[in-house]
Amino acid sequence: MIVRFYIDPMEQDLYEYSVSYEGETLYSDVGLGSMEDCIVAATEGLDQEAVAAEIAYKGIISGTYALASLALMSEQIASHALQTTLAIEEVNE
Image 1 (cartoon, one colour):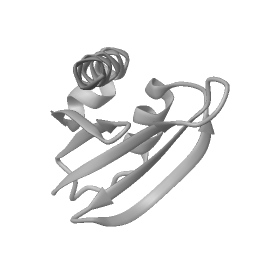
Image 2: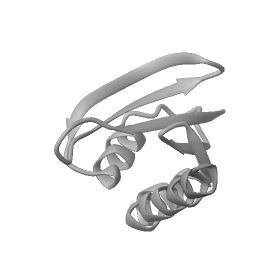
Image 3: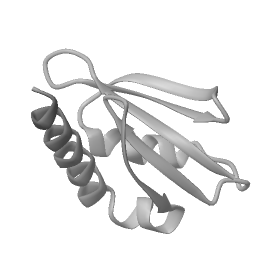
């Protein structure tokens, strides 16, 4: 199963995330200190059926990653998601 992590900014450097599968929210949390914290927390909550996750920041999907990558490269994945979203938002201005 491939789940999707939705990560969104809240206020003053806080973030929220939700994890969904086929449009149904499985779990979520708010008030985390970084995008990386959201990825780590979302990954820790996955059951054994999940093999990968799509990462979406502010509604823009930046990629699909195997669980091992999420655990080992969460900082780089968060950075990539931010850069992808910023690039797309810049084009849309």
